[in-house]
Length: 214
Length: 121
Image (tube, rainbow over all chains, first blue to last red; front, side, top):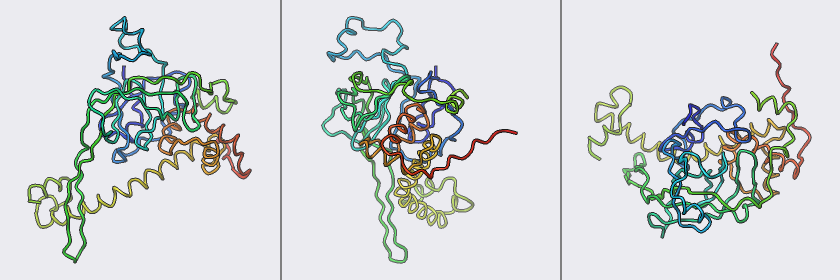
């Protein structure tokens, strides 16, 4: 299922693993994947993504919004998600923004007071996008919620903080592990009624359409 | 820290710096100092990279970075540069809609030169 087009999203921000985009149609298809070379892997660790391969089965959640799925414990095809294709959202957690896809996990700063297997609703949704349309929030998409589950409350890999002043006989060595929380994103909901921008709204003139078809 | 830890941190160093403790210790200390400094520099570098990418993405649509960000700030769109650079790479149509919004809000200066499209001979 995972194709060879490794997205630079993960390379930029992934400390753990690389994701690979399924080839998407229309809206979300990057028109020129080779234009931006993959950046070096030493860059920031603000954002991590789970691999597309171990796609979690449809969550058997107890939320009222998904009440109708409780009657069927397993969808007929566990690989086909019940959300729109190419759905993603930009959500703000702990004053950092993350691009979020349903079914994947992200690592954020430690959420105090959240225990493992807690359901979390994230309301600061700044942008929701699908294959065909885009809901741009000003600043947030009202009534949009991202539901997530706390998977693990762990620690970042250790960094050694080494302070040294030359010729002054001063050196300090401290190890530091920053607490983090891993969230599994269950679903993105509530954005349907927000004003959106669809493919027809963009004035695609001839030069643009040439690029998009290359 | 003892020698074992020094040598573990000195893997991949050049020449005697990975094998001989006296040299390795100096080099490892320097490496740790650099990593302390660069953990702060990395944030600056990444922001600069994001801005370059956003600039490149918006100039494809005839808007430069400054005017684009000004238009977004006017519209109270609070996406940060990291996310904007990712969208400009992977979601081109969403990015175009953002550029259109910004351009409608702030048409900007008229001096942006879109480089002429190079035609293969």
